[in-house]
Image (cartoon, rainbow, N blue to C red; front, side):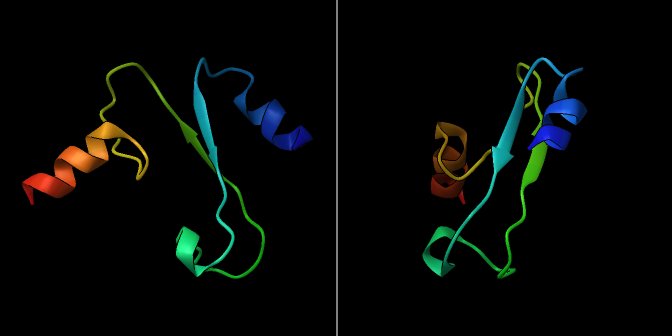
Length: 59
């Protein structure tokens, strides 16, 4: 977590994502963290966001 803090210090916004268990979409069964730099209006549809729901409904 210290390394993640160092890596993200220069970013104004990030998502830190980890999943545990198949129901939580875990596909690699060891601990790992995804560090996703973000910016206002990037339209990245993460599974728990309204953008994802809208995209899934439109498909």
